[in-house]
Amino acid sequence: MRLGVVASLALALVGGSTDAIGAADGRVVVRPGERVRRGDIVLFEAPAAATRRCGATGKYLERVIALPGETWSERRGVVYVDGRKLLEPYLRPGHGDTLSRPTLRVPPRHYFVMGDNRASSCDSRVWGPLPANNVVGVVVRVKSS
Image (tube, rainbow, N blue to C red; front, side):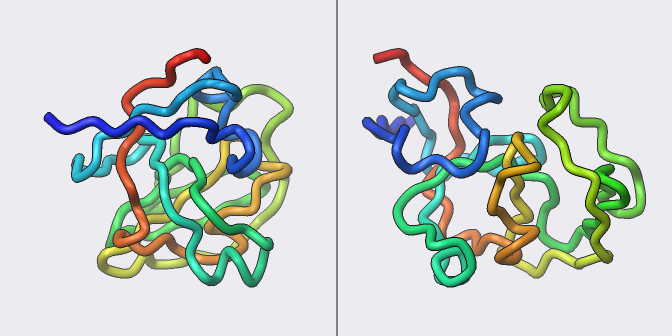
């Protein structure tokens, strides 16, 4: 089992993703090569589209919402995957949004990722699905500094 520790990540977080993992000033421990599942928080290199649309560069954290081949949509802030409402117990009240977006099919070797602070997160809703090659690893824990 290979683990990687990424230090000083607090300056490179998207939206409110740290809310879900609880430590904005900690070290993020990731497992490179781990199978990515819905609900996982992943560490990734910002894709070119994120740089163009959000000014994002470097490494970021987001939650995986939809997997390759699945469909994603949002209606009045409620997320649907393959037409079914996604239960998201990790979202804090007041951190959602009320937007609606059309259905999108996640391409092969991509993930649809979103920040837990939906109202202020620049994520796949803005810059599109995340290429799997950009994923550094799945977050397994956060260590306090």
